[in-house]
Length: 112
Image (tube, rainbow, N blue to C red):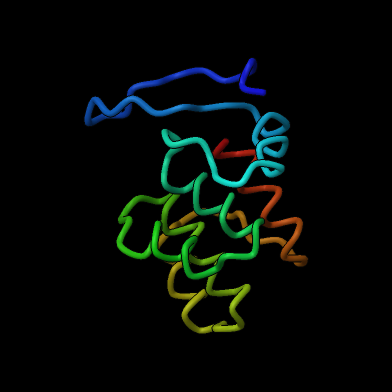
């Protein structure tokens, strides 16, 4: 299942699994995400599995543009528009899409 994955080192030297978006989507059939996914990608995985709280916990204190973009998406999904707007502004990124599903796809395509 992870034949299209690769490992990269982050700026702090942490090695994390990266994979293309299609390979990531295929992992949604599993019971848990791969252990070495970046927190942003793991959060999107848990969100897709219906565990908003677990997804939010992964990005709640993640002070990176990608983390803040996922955080914004999660608050938008929760229905907390003003909180989502705050995180979108902090993220400085344009992942927002009219439909939540399209936004999730854009985030996966960019981050997986």
